[in-house]
Image (cartoon, rainbow, N blue to C red; front, top):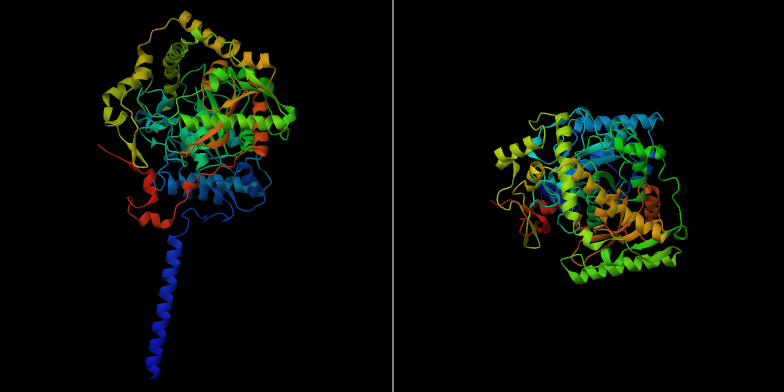
Length: 579
């Protein structure tokens, strides 16, 4: 064979080897996890990393805030609208703004001028919380009437979070208008954002703050802000295996947060650990002249809620909340699974006892059960009355919207039904070949609030009644009679209503998972302004009993993007629009 032929064969062999190497590399890439880190070390898993972990990495210069923000943005791009279609984030801060803020935090760190332990960490903010023009995002409440609405300034807790060094990475989806729109509104659904779904089971995560909880569970941010009237922190935290704290009424300012009701609303925090909850609470709590309710928080100014971490169960007296009211069938889709959850919760309480906690076996409420039948109607009337007043005060602070009060909001929705409501039962969420209706047909709640004509005297009587149920016969009654620090119970119960009436704090911690894939949590409730007790109990629970659950289904291979949805595991959670 001639030298020329040998040379040609050699070149062909080299080309074939190169092609095989390229093919092998491409196959390896296609078969790899799409979530493999690009901007931070591969050893850091954003699905499991806590705020404390990330704070340590930043302090040790393992990576920068710019790199961390870029990695979180990539995760949001992968699974928010695409991938797992979690629909947790309505929008992110414009990238040039976001990266400039992150660079500023990095430069402050280099100059030894950090603003605290949260310095340089991202936070997701529920989109019922105002953000000022500097962040370049509207504040929409999930409603088309406010699609381009902007606020003059940040909500107080958003401002204080940034003063502590946190970086607002984006705004979370929510149940439209805090869930108080129509009787058919699905939890976690908004016209602008669609329906948020849990990375655990592909179902809605419950509550108006579901997008915030999903953001933390899915690794879109280590911390998120939510708000609660009744259950919108405790329920999503329970269903996404995150830590959640609904703070005492008046401990954190509500200024700049869309008010459903001035009597029952409270902000809250989601995180992957107790340290994240307590550190954020230290940064955002305290008196604010713009929220009169926070006058009562003055004694707690400057509190460091991580300072007394490290207790043992011997330090605590825990009461099992009213067994008749909170430990019976709650109408679950699978009664046997629900019973296993109750047994698991009681087994966990027994472990607390064995580790030294004093456990009171039944802290009954002093309720007049007949009187309590009036509760749903009484609370609804209070909310209706306050919503009409509060919307009229709040909406004039918004720009680029024609809505100025409850009446003009109802009118906008009536005049623009294609923008305000969904078509038919649209969209459907497909889960294991079942269609789950996500509806948004009307605005019955808004209309009832607009039409209600309640005298001030009747309103005050109803409000006093709810206070009696929550305090004199409910939370405080049980805590004082049993002489305990906190009550324990399954996280998602009517306790959220009693906590709203009494303005008591509630804490949720991960506990277990139903056989059909949905997590469930354990809840604690304490007296108003005993938030420190709850975060210390959360810390202790995390160190001794946390099951360390991870949403395994958040992982998927790169080749899934190129496989027909009928064959891909991604189709299990696909959102389908149907007319």
